[in-house]
Length: 189
Image: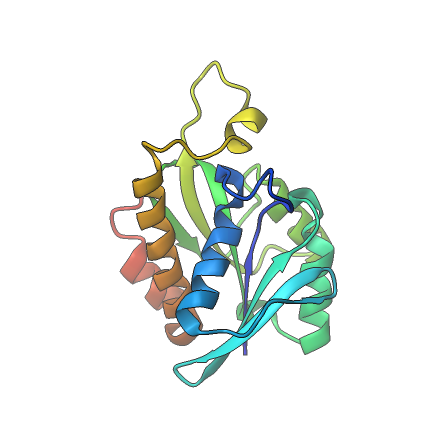
């Protein structure tokens, strides 16, 4: 079993913002896999579906981004999952809009959702898939930028990136991190 967690913020105000790219990818994956309805479990919306012989559980923590760690930890504990069975999908302000980058582990890189997960798991040894939403204009407040609606001009590029991120997440679930990185990080570094 693999757990894929898309990070975002709850409520209609945040639904179409840059900061909810992780949630949007989780929703695309659920639709693509024909997963059942989302159900609340341990502070997250959860659904699952089979993929190439692997059970894939999709989750979207229901609290705000900076509180994502506790639900992720609770889900990991509930299913007794090792860290290599977790993929977290997040937006990345430091990555150019439309690019994706998969990593086997690493720091939070300034992302409060990742920082919360690292704090609650007690380590950085889990895969993360970043979706580029940046760079923010130099004079703009970063919080205002990530929490703003995706401009129409950027939407096609971000839609394509989210589709590629969904492809990368499914490759990760079956082929593993290294193989998925080789396929999907080309042109993203």
